[in-house]
Image (cartoon, rainbow, N blue to C red; front, side, top):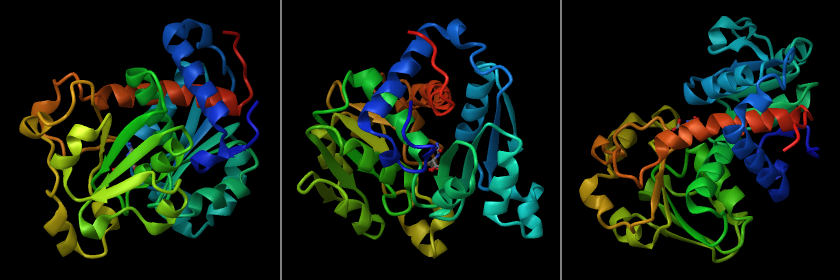
Length: 307
Ligand code: NCD
């Protein structure tokens, strides 16, 4: 049974709770039939105030595959937010209709506000540049799946480390495992925020702008897109947008067993010519995200299926 009623950031769950969710997800992959009616009669609300493909659809697919049903919206213009309703009021209302809520919002900090207002279990599906804990669960299950462990790893986080919420959540989550080293690879204007770095173990990271030189040291390369929608100036985005492009030639510098992850969507930062390299696993990663969300919903609703 999880201690927290909500998941706003990875620290809301203990490492043991996260490891258990990953184990349940692997059991679901192996025995999907056992789980097909686990949530018959339950309702998930997906309230997306900001665009999404993977996160929303994988939540909805997850709930459907557990026998549950889904209500919600994918555009705040079609909700009462456009009439001026507060986030808190929306959460209270939807708590009367659904057994669990997953919500995404463009404002950093909206995840905690929504969690505090909701009267049912609440999942932050991304709040502005702040956190994206279910992407982190997706990343962790992918790493476990391909590397067999979550400790003793060197992980390069590359791209927009300033505005990218996935890297903020992932760094905080991975830092809790033993002997994890980070290489933060970004252009100068898009470095990992001080507040995130302050929360990590001392000496666990280095910073560089050079992807090519970092590649041979990495067990995992985590690429990200520049978060165009969060840039203050279009000119800065235009100047930096193609600063990292992982292609066949560059990937030659990586180890044989390095894996390449990306939360997706990609723009230009990974060339399609590496998609068939066995080290690139971002499409598999997106699929694993659905299974880990199935496990998360089960746990948050306190439904246990014997393994
Ligand atoms: C990420 C997000 O929304 O932060 N996408 C996702 O959920 N897979 C990454 C991104 O949009 O760049």
